[in-house]
Image 1 (spheres, rainbow over the protein chains, first blue to last red):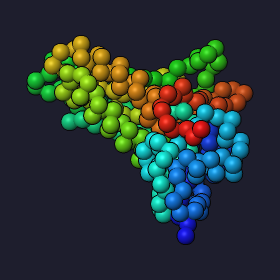
Image 2 (image 1 turned 180 degrees about the vertical axis):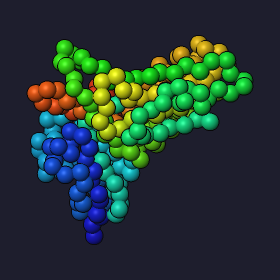
Image 3 (image 1 turned 120 degrees about the vertical axis):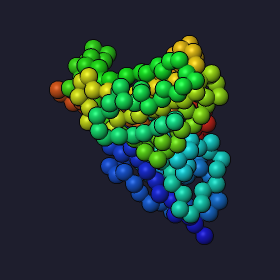
Length: 81
Length: 146
C-alpha cells in the first residue's frame, strides 16, 4: 500500500524545482519528516535554502503520519509584510 | 469585526482602519506597511508578493486570536496585498482597536512581528539587473527535518 500526496512549492522553492505542484507516492505510514527528506533527495538544489514545510496547511512537527490526499508544502522562511 | 484578507487590489488604508471603531473603544492603531525603494543599499524597481493563500489566511486568523488573548484589545484586522507592487504602495495593513491606545500599539507591533515570522507570504525584489526572492529569518521550531 502507498499514499499519494500533493507537494506544493512557492516563491524560491517553485523556482528551484521548476514546478508549483507535483504528486508523489510514498509508502504507507511514512512520517512527514521522512517524506520531506525524500523530496530533498529528489530536488537537492532545495537544500541550499533554509526551508520550512507544512502538512495540510499547518507547520509540520515532523512526526505526523501522511495519508492519501494530504497536502505537503515546501517553502523558504517567510518574508511577507 | 475581526478581519483577515489577501488581495490583489490596492488597499484603502483609511477604510480598513475605520472598519474597527467599536463604541467601547477609544483608539484604533493602524500600521500602513508599504514598498521601500532602497533595501540594503539596493534600488528596488518593484516587488512581487506571493502567498500560500489558504495557509496564510489560517495563520493570520491564529495571530488575531492570539493577539486578543495576549493584549487588552477588542478587535484586529490584517490585509496583505499580493502580486506586483510599485514603490510606495501599501503591502500590509494591520488595524487594532482597544479601549486604550497603549494595548493597541503593543498588539499592532506584535502582530507585524509575528506576521513576518509565521505567515506564508514571500516577497521578490526586482532590481534593474536582476531579481531575488527574499528569505526571512524564521525561527519556527520543529519545521525542518534533521
